Image 1 (spheres, rainbow, N blue to C red):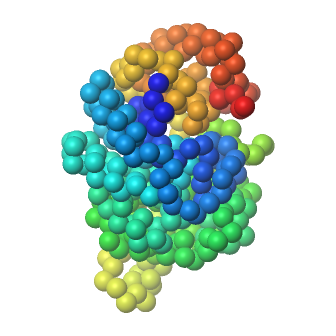
Image 2 (tube, one colour):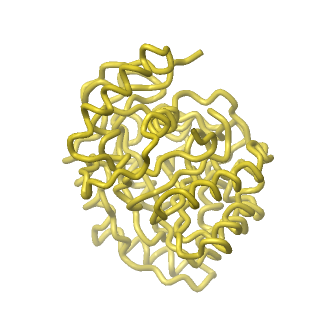
Length: 337
């Protein structure tokens, strides 16, 4: 079983994606109410080598020597990956040793105001920062940030990274009813989106149990209406206004908006890992999953649900996992000590 790697998962955005976790559970600069990893246990902005660089490289070398090459190696997992001060070194190693593999970074974006963080991510092929709110009240309610984070500086950090980054930048917005779906919220988010000028905006919503109970996912109708609003002619006027006020040579365009909230449907039936029990543990350690989630994201055969259920039963009997009933089904998660 790997300690710092997980998957690979069949991702709706990245194809076959091997996860790299550079912080221990759960160290983050935010304590988002919807986080599928649970509540933040260490709310911090301190950057350091939370997990050893050499150990991460050893696991990468072992994995890539013994398994099919993934489409992406993705930095995500149990907390905010840019808190690890050596994320840039790990990216450099991957790009120099296996240039055929693309690198993605899923980040909450709060540390992009730090020049060292920005420079460390420049060799990644895809960076996906998140921005769930552009109003201070909603930001505090949904993201529950470290008290040193200034919302304006947070947004400006993403803008500054966009200025120097040559790869693909996708801005993710998670919509949660009663937290960030008011008209004012969406208008402010729209303004921020056109300041940032990403290659694409990705709308998401809750799909697994969050850090707090009784959260409601956004409906497809709501996501579609927000998508249409962000792509409206009014948005083009906002972009032109920002361009005219800017002192820099930005080229603004209508930004495409994707809804990525729909659940993954398995496209192929390849089994990426033979050690399925370990793969299951590595996956649900970081996010609760149903049996069908596991069958899809681990790339198992169509009839693997029975096999996975047997592994889950064994893991429950061993006291390693537990389950919780949600509207979408039974979610399995690591037993909290």
